[in-house]
Length: 400
Image (cartoon, rainbow, N blue to C red; front, side, top):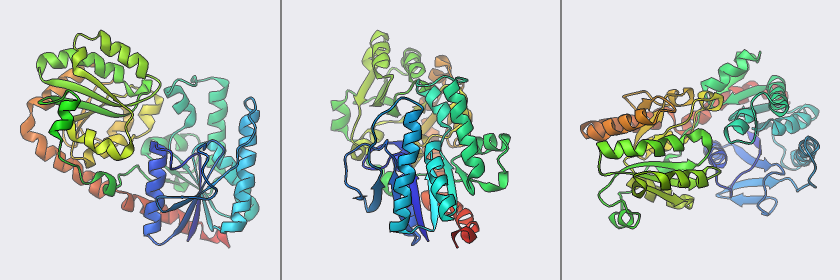
């Protein structure tokens, strides 16, 4: 089976999007399938075309002149469709698997219909909601409604639709997309990357000011919807309960300056540490220092519908997980079993939940073991990729 993936961006860029892509392609290669990726014009790294990274081949769409929206997006679709059409002649896929955003699906639809190739469209998030979450869009705006309309159109015309969680599936069914054409291929963990957590390095802990500390941590992007302001606001109450408590924030993003300013004003500013962005290969060192990974996402449409990847990585690292009680987290975390859930937007509740976890160390080994088994059995990529097989095989006749 030859599967050509159409992507927004890919390795060598590092993001949740590219790590999921890498995992999907690696798992498909392990099954003996032939795979390649094609990125659109938004992938801007100046690499070769094609480019081989980590044993995977990615083709590139040449850059195009900038233009005002929506002309820019229309030209992006055209450029990607033109490059895809040429690549079909060269690489000869028998399946096209397009991934979010909807612009990729629109380009893939043009080519798939003309070439009589089956098309799977994978939705990782609704990009109109992601724009609201990262502060670049407004719910109900003209752009929001247009993006939603294009997403629905692409899902309706694709031969099969893959989503990463039940929340997205239910939303599409509510839009009139036939439930039988939707498969759920959830986020998973590459156990080769996250399955062998190192021991904490005492010298590294001392270097970061965390020697002998009880460490709450967050590793990821600093977007407003992540609720890190609530986590910082919870620290004074947590330190009062647990005098050795420290907060370690690893990453960066649009909220970084505001969060640092908030931390400087905190009465426990000396307990809040910003490590900045770190190379992906060094992330394990930071995970090793953290006792509890906290994910205090705010309640909004994006977080209610979409499951994040980071809590699964933390479980694979044998770390305790505490997260806000939003829909995306509830699909991953069973409260009191694989993690702890607390009300979103409530710093006092965050402090209480974290304090209770630190007070109950006698249950830590059991909870970490249960969470690790959940990831190994239900959320590893080799089993997740199997969920694509019925869609791929069911579309076989269209490849003739």
